[in-house]
Amino acid sequence: MSQKSRIFDLENFTQLAQALEISEFELFKNAYRSNAEYTIFKKKKCAQTYRTIAVPPDGLKEVQKKIVQKILDTIPLASECTGYRSGLSIVANVTPHCGRSFVFSTDIENFFESITSERVVEFFLRLGFSFPLASVLASLTTYNGTLPIGAPSSPALANLICFPLDSELADYATSKNWNYTRYGDDLTFSGDTRFSLQDMRIISDIVESEGFSLNIQKTRFTRRNDTQVVSGLVVNEKPNLPRAKRRMIRAIFHQAKHFPERFKDRTRELENHVGQLTMLAGQSEEVLKYKAIINSLV
Image (cartoon, rainbow, N blue to C red; front, top):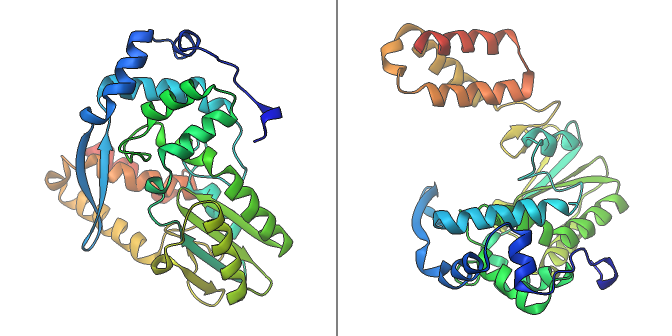
């Protein structure tokens, strides 16, 4: 974003506080006390690995939500960015990759942690904020120098800061007649032409030029005759749950129907499964049957 495309022209803290619908006292209190008041805990990702979650205190969380609503949500995102966006589901991310000869998927290592407070300051400067205001906005939205997983402002900031990355990767994909999407830290390319090791190197170079690095352990290349999975969904023909996941869901609802007393406190889990199926197949006969089972438990 060039200086000619400056979006915001707020030059003092009074104007910023008014834009966020808070007092100047609240603005500074949250900016300068934020790091000391986060709640930190570990969440298991998979075997032997954990993700550190940093949750802001309620007052700061509300300010971060205002920053999203009043500032970040007003800025267009790249169309290839499909994650953390209102009105878009995981289906929007996987549909462009259905029925392709190849699917190449990888992810960005330590995605949120790679976005430092300095990068956040630079982003707000490009929007047209003065340096003091950009610094305060960065203080309000970062924890220990990076975007915290657990803050409501982090996904929106990450998406916007990744706009140049999405543009470069989309341009490269277009030059090869491929499709490209990004869902959070997941990058996916697909197409019907050749994909080479050199292409992977170029993609890696583009990612590194934008201040990120690829997680090689989560890099996968699959052809049409293999099971092609994007963001947890099979995409060989149309978006679908993996066969093992469908079998598991059928088994759970079978148990819920015949042993309802065991599932009285698990309705949310069942509703999540139905939500996934509805997203993929709408109000199918299977979905309606499962909904009836859930209703019988209430």
